[in-house]
Length: 189
Ligand SMILES: Cc1cc2nc3c(=O)[nH]c(=O)nc-3n(C[C@H](O)[C@H](O)[C@H](O)COP(=O)(O)O)c2cc1C
Image (cartoon, rainbow, N blue to C red; front, top):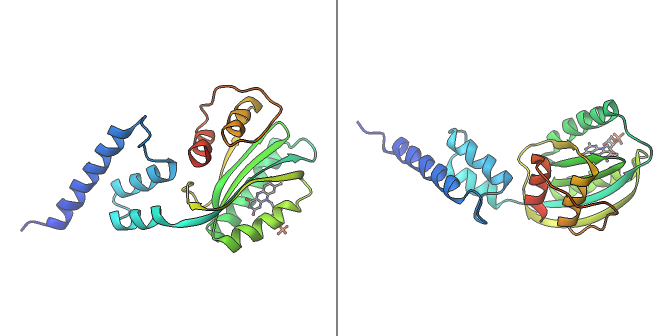
């Protein structure tokens, strides 16, 4: 007996893999989050309908930058990241935290009240100041993890990202290949 639904599913997976391969490097290339969803589909974890629903889900996004109050040691960043991961996972908040030479850039995305409540807490955190919101509003979810991405990046790469997202910054413009930065560019460029 033929299991037609399984063969359809397998054919769909092959079709998705082919589309991803064919669009690589073009403007049709799936964004970071979409790629992760498609990979989960190819692995059989999600159905195409679930992928479609997740891609269509709009979330509230906040992008801000700030300055560390004093230089932040790696161990402190690690601690911050661990507690942020745990909290964000519970609240289904995804995003990215970048730190470079005294400057933070963070993307938060998720359910609007959860994101706003967290951002209000973050804004009052004494570890940083000059918190400036670059973008705040609805959009498709771009980061796949229920946690924070993290890049300890050189300031030159940070400048590239900030230029792409139209933030004025007193740094040079360089080359970017950090995957977290590329994800940020995917999301906001
Ligand atoms: C730059 C920066 C980014 C932060 N990002 C997060 C985050 O994404 N999630 C989170 O729970 N806490 C984050 N925090 C920590 C919060 O500001 C706050 O300390 C934490 O939520 C605990 O809050 P509470 O002490 O009021 O419980 C961040 C802090 C800083 C300085």
